Length: 427
Ligand SMILES: *[C@@H]1O[C@H](CO)[C@@H](O)[C@H](O)[C@H]1NC(C)=O
Ligand SMILES: *[C@@H]1O[C@H](CO)[C@@H](O)[C@H](O)[C@H]1NC(C)=O
Ligand SMILES: *[C@@H]1O[C@H](CO)[C@@H](O)[C@H](O)[C@H]1NC(C)=O
Image (cartoon, rainbow, N blue to C red; front, side):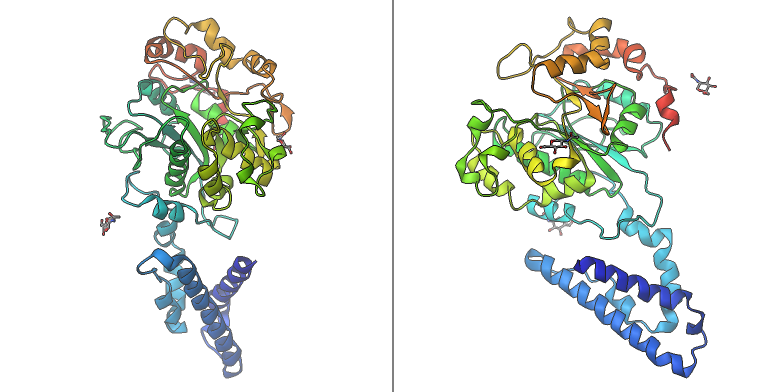
């Protein structure tokens, strides 16, 4: 509410000083109301700047007050200032992507910086939404050549960005031409089944949020492969009304059995949900997740093995807070049919045309549904032909057959940018 009022006040003030012709030759009678408006607007904005500074500045040494000087300048200068501020160079200050993914912020600083969002909904510039591909890895990316072929299908770097979370100290060796070059983010030690896993997911999300162009955020691992050409995945994600987070109610010991009463009253046992950790979120939900101070600290403290934060936190919290904004399913295919604590891993011997055909066809979706874990696959409320954009888990040995079959079976790679119908629908 406060934000709305503030925005309106600022907008009116600016319009009055730039568009009203009376400001150039002000008749005395009009001068006083104008001055009053100017003074009020200035006071309003100054108060806002100070409030924001005070609210956010508890741990900060010197909150920046970049606009205060401009507000104090006499009205005669206002027109030039406005022109400058509304030019691309002025706005770029807010819209520019950081040059490298690296920075020296602490997690606390990072999550705070990532939690900003504009209150004005309409972007005052042509914003091309990007998909952020966030790789949660131990270090090496053995399937990187496959991903390079996938991203080559994007034509340019305008539609995606890449982030890599690896073991601290890991030094990747990608050439400057690679999409992975300098895309590593500051990382912490991450253990499977431990809350540090979920910390890493939020850290990746926060790093990707620092780029204002990023609109969709996909979490991937080093064993993931793309199942379609870039334009298909891009269109699928950017046109979806839902975020792809798996969420289902499992009454058994591996579902509700992992609920912890200490999570009440925020989460009741009946609200407990489970889902794969490989999420896809839109920007609004991503900001909610990095800013969450209500649920996450409790999950982190009380959800300890055999309760796994990364399998329950997002499915549960988003089912409580935003049930209509998630698809209750993942876009990442995985095979649990062999049983056990880990899904199947596919190597060179598994990858052939028939296998890839199964993954990319609707049959893959049907098979998954029969396991009873997922609801029937829909997309924007309609039965969907394509349920999965990515698949896991693939061993390094799968790289060679995948590289060979990708141009024919998956629509990317092979050194040429593909020309499919989905590509034409972009832009
Ligand atoms: C980050 O780097 C800046 C200079 O580039 C330095 O002033 C600041 O103290 C550093 N912060 C941390 C937390 O290391
Ligand atoms: C996901 O599940 C919730 C119930 O938790 C439901 O309200 C919502 O409509 C479902 N989303 C879709 C896309 O079906
Ligand atoms: C791409 O599409 C255009 C027009 O649809 C066509 O003329 C061209 O031959 C296609 N290129 C390839 C490599 O398929």
